[in-house]
Image 1 (cartoon, rainbow, N blue to C red):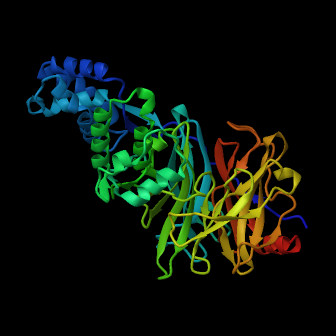
Image 2: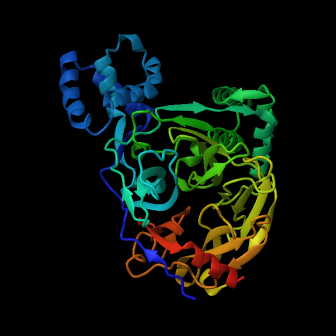
Image 3: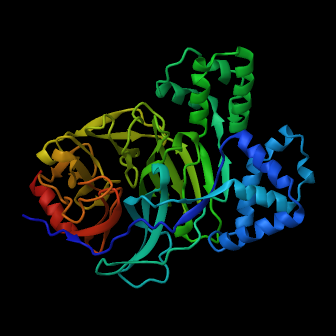
Length: 489
């Protein structure tokens, strides 16, 4: 039986005009020179220089003067080194100085890809058989730095997606709150990550209370560095501990932002090269309350760290690393509810096979069981998941990806037993979706990829990326797909 998959004529591509105002910093020496030159200007010269900057950029950013002030505060500590009293500086001088430490960054100038889709928490003011949805994307800009961005839209009764207008003023989180750490679990994560160093972590952690803050940890490390007088190549542990500690934080966006204006841009040290492939899922807990989770991969240019965020409203996000021996690779995807009293997760420990894991703690994953190996030619190189499993009456529907010859990525599907998802009921022998002639050209040729699908009006809705450049979506009749999966079991 040939499945009737319908590609939709809806392409979402990079938009170079979508920019955020980022902090710009080079060196302390150059920063001090800039500060000095501004302070040598008269107040009239300051205002004359500042006026066109405010005029040109106030329409591109919400409250640009507030952003300039925030960026001035990031370098204000240099004033003490210059023997300058911060109280002696006028507000106009602060704002102008801040403008020199600000740059525009086009967050999706290079690519807009790897989408996931979930039901919007607000389903008001829509027609019957319609569904308001949130799509998340991996947006990539200059330097190939990835961030998470969002779009909203209405899926109508015929599964045509009408996107809602996007906001004009993108914004990073208004508030960033650091985490309070538990010493025992923090030390355990250091051990799990297999850092090789000659300095025992206890030399630092023993000086801290059982609960400590990020700033307390940094101050402690600075004191230990001074007391040990270590050579540069012996200071690896300090970097490792700070790298891990910076991965815990909370983000809060302003209530006057549209969801399309909220950008989850790398915040911590371990994310500085990007936030990759967030797999969003609407999770229902034992009390029938809803929380949205997303697993993603943080990348610092050398190491990757699986992480998880959660939110109830898409205004406030909590971010934590994923702990445990199996939290070592890309592609973790959470089930939308507990299975037999435990959290369940798809994962790919070795970058080659599909695994399944269970845990009592959503952030701690210690053991996994092999679920699927590459079996067919279109997946001989590797297999993985394309988002969280979807619950159906026939079992857990999993959209998979396979990599075959010429590194061509295709999408497949598998069906897992509803009560025991370690059992594979069926699995497509041929791809559900392969890149066609229009989709195979792009930043990474011959790739289709997804980070999460959903069911609406008896169809499976599959948003997917085309060659790591732009995104679209397709639909397939759910009953036909499930019938084919059971037949190929």
